[in-house]
Image 1 (spheres, rainbow, N blue to C red):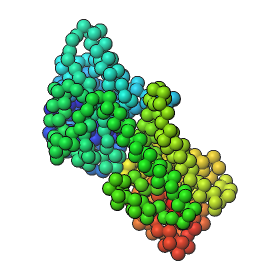
Image 2: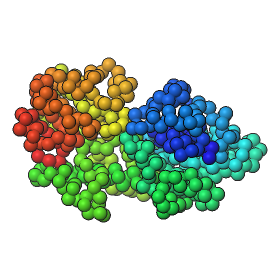
Image 3: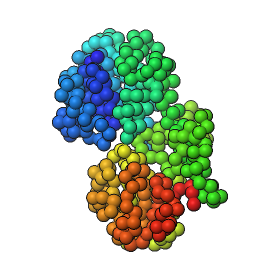
Image 4: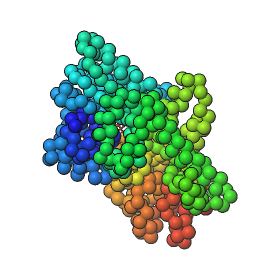
Length: 437
Ligand code: NAD
């Protein structure tokens, strides 16, 4: 199939590249010229395992192209994905201007029957608005072209995005149009092992499914994080409790890891956007309100633990391992590291940082306010405390004896429970973690 993907971020790039790899002809479009220039050379703008190699492979195979303009190719395709950002607006609602801009562009350019597939996370009813915008542009052009707007929310996780797209748990298709449903079924058939994984529903339900899923996961993490505070008081170990809970198939093992609160480009904004939708509909979602409050508190837990040991942070060297909101990605959007860094800077600490993938993003945000290190060992030199804020696997297997010698004071705040408390204390560290003594 000939496909256009508009918006070449984490979702659009993974979608376009994966669809090209399945033998489709794909054009990925983005307004960011620098991004597109690099992509044309096979350089990925994001850190995602295996992505760059797959981009290069499919450019060479002639299946994948990149462009800054929708104009040239839009009438060679009958399937258009919208995958632009929907960041949080000032009032907590999802900012839809990028989606609507793309809808206007599509309506002002198409000359033949198309399916417009919305992959961006958008509040219920957005599909209808996109449809109205495209129709009004066609009316201006005095054209009566058949088109269908489908909701097809994306559930990939950064860090395992390619695998998640290519081996999805399920594919949600929100449409009541049989032509569109059949086309999407054909498109996704290479990725599912049974038709049952293609979950067909109406458009509003598909839009709502995405928010319901993310909000549930945010709630699950937050539930474990809140319980971790009680666990510390009563002498329970949340790492063990989570295993004991997780074997119950009704609960499951995932998303029970305690830590410094959820972050990233999705959960924070999606929880707030759903609360906004609820308020507009006079529904008080009390659980979700608590989730955001508890999560905001949780982001401060690492610095509260730091304060137990170091009263005055002014001028003290504090090292931070991790910037990204989780391991295996370079994405720093809403990362718990931001809360910790902002606090440390406000207390006039000297903040040294190292992240295996997110250093460039850190430099864009903090410029010369931080000391950027080349590796973990340089990062801990002369530090009075080390905070592990991102769960990069490599932080687990560092030489902590060497680290102890390099630090000015052997204090570790392990906000991801990567290390063994007994071993760390036996090795002479003052050691704090989450939900276990
Ligand atoms: P992103 O910010 O990484 O990328 C969005 C891209 O859209 C940017 O490159 C931007 O330049 C481009 N863009 C904006 N306006 C454009 C226009 N008019 N024409 C062409 N390109 C334009 O965003 P993302 O993380 O890929 O997320 C995209 C959507 O998918 C969001 O709604 C998000 O909530 C949702 N989502 C994200 C993830 C994730 O893990 N990142 C997972 C599932 C769903």
